[in-house]
Amino acid sequence: MNATARELVASFDLEKLVPEFYADPYPTYRALREHEPVKLLPNGSYFLTRYDDLVGIYKNTKLFSSDKKREFAPKYGDSLLYEHHTTSLVFNDPPAHTRVRRLIMGALSPRAIAEMEPDLVALVDRLLDTLAAKGDVELIGDFASAIPIQVIGNLLDVPMPEREPLRDWSLAILGALEPVIGADVFARGNRAVKDFLAYLEILVERRRARPGNPDRDVLTRLIAGEDSGERLTAKELLHNCIFLLNAGHETTTNLIGNGLVALSHHPAEKRRLIGNPDLAKTAVEEVLRFESSNQLGNRMTTERVDLGGIAMAAGTPLTLCIGAANRDPRQFADPERLDIGRTPNRHLAFATGAHQCAGMALARLEGAIAISRFLARFPDYRLNGTPVRGGRVRFRGFLSVPCAVG
Ligand code: HEM
Image: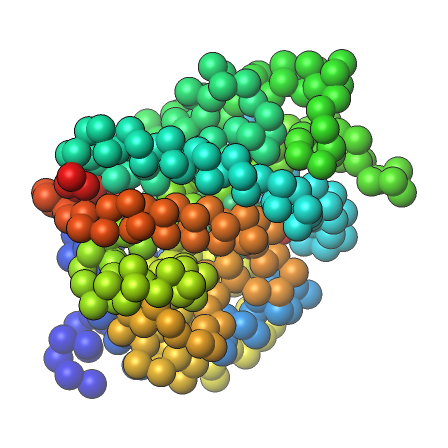
C-alpha cells in the first residue's frame, strides 16, 4: 500500500469527512476497497466497499436488517422524524415491509409509468424552451430538480399551485439522514414532516371524497388498496407518500445533474451520445454507476456473522458503500472510465434484493428523457462557472451548476 492510500484508509471516518473527500470520494473508496474492504469506524460500525459483499448483504434480509427503530431512537428521540423514518417501507423488514411494498409496487406499475411518458416529454420540452430563452442557466434549479418534483406531483396528483413547498420539505427531511446532524437540521426536518403531514391529510381527504383515475394517480391506488382487501393504515399511507416524494426527488435530480456534468467533462462520450441517441438507456445506467446519486445504504446484523474474515456481533451497524462497489474492478472492466455504452452494467445504484428501488423504472425514464432531449436541443452546452456540490456523503449531486446553452 502506498503512503497516500495508507493515510486515506487510516484516517477514514464517516463522521469527520474533509472537503477533498466531498469533491472526489473515489480515491478514498478505492483505497478502502483494496486495503480494508470491511473497515471498522470509530463509532463501532463497519464500512463496506466490495461489490460482492454488498450483493450478499442486500440479498439476505434475515441476517441484515433494514429496521431502524433501535438505531434512530438516540438520533431522533420521540420526534416526528423518528415516526416518519421508522414507518417508511425502506426502513422496515419483512413481513411489514412486504405488505407495504406490494401496495406501492402495484401503484407504480409499468402501465402507470408508461402513462406518464407523454406528460414527461411535454414537461421537459417546456423547461427546455425556458432555458433557451434564458441562455445562461442554472442546470439544477432551472432543469434537473424541476423534473422529479413535477413527476411526483403528477404521481400523487398534487394541484399545481400547491407544489411549491414540496422540494424544501423533501430536502429538509432527507438532510436529517446525514451521519451527523446539528440542532438546526433536526428542527428543520421535524418541521418539514409536520407541515408535510398536515398538507397530505388534506390531500387524502379530498381524494377520498373524489377519487382520481387509479391508472394514473398513485394516491388513489394507495387509498383504495389491493383487490385482496389489503390496505395501508392512515399513518402508513401518509408517511409512505412523503417517502415516495423524498425517494424520487433528490436522487433523480442528481441523476440528471450528474449526467449532464459528467458528459461535459467527457466530451468524447458526450459526442458519442449525441451521434447515437439510441445509447440513452445505457448512458443513464453508466451515470448511475459512475456517479451514483445514492452512495450509501445501511443495514444492521441480526445475529453473529462473519464478513470478510471479521466476526461481528448481532446488532452491528453496517454502511454499504454503493459508490465504491460500483467501481469494483472485479465486477466492472476499467471501472474509473465513463463508458456510455457499457454492457453488461449490473450496478447497485438502485441496490438489489427485497428493497431494490421501487421507482427505478420511473427514474430511468426521467433520466433518459431529460438527458437525451437536453443534448438534442443544446449539443454545445458548456459549464460557465464552478458547479457547487451538495456537500452530502449519502446523496451525491450538485446544488447549482451554471451553464450556457445559447
Ligand atoms: C436515480 C434515482 C433513484 C435512485 C438512485 C434510487 C435509489 C434507491 C436505493 C439505493 C434504494 C434502496 C435503499 C435500501 O434499501 O437501502 C431505493 C429504494 C426505494 N426507492 Fe429509489 N431511487 C431513485 C428513484 C426513485 C423514484 C423516482 C422513486 C419513486 C417515485 C423511488 C422509490 C423508492 C422506494 C419506494 C424505495 C423503497 C423500496 C423498499 O424498501 O422496498 N426511488 N432507491
